[in-house]
Image 1 (cartoon, rainbow, N blue to C red):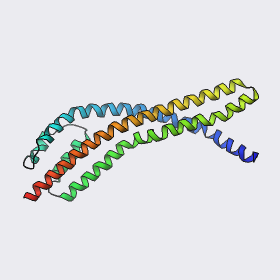
Image 2: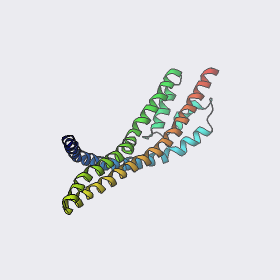
Image 3: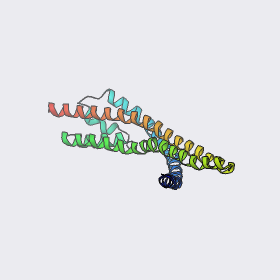
Image 4: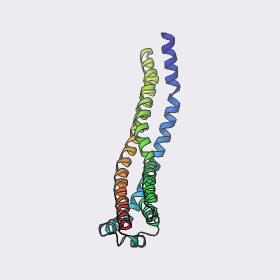
Length: 200
């Protein structure tokens, strides 16, 4: 039994360095996500008002004029897909395919936030528990310096993991609301195109 316990202790201790490296990588990825999220927020602020105004008064007869009223230069995903749907308006199959592609693109953009939300706390917990073993050994042998160092590592990894998880969670919640609104607008546009195609 002691041999098995020693093997498990060596394995868990050996995982500390990879866990710390991954936590540092997640921390910097969370900072990059905050920057890209802010840029995306600014882009949405510019286009959201225009899209909302156009959607409110849109009818099947006016749907062909929508492309001219959309912002010309923008990185907004919904505007890009609105243009693609309008270009493929004569094929309902292509429109449905574009709607599915938009969902895939939105899910891809959410992937980083989801990863941070799940991996941050998991790695933070691993980084907390792994040094606790050496810390308890140091306590039992009276090596207070070793115990203090291991406890410092444990607390630091917890904070970094929770920070990355919090950034991921907050950005995921906001982005999901954005993409839900965008998907509603795209489905409304597709329904109008279908209604117009049925009339013709």
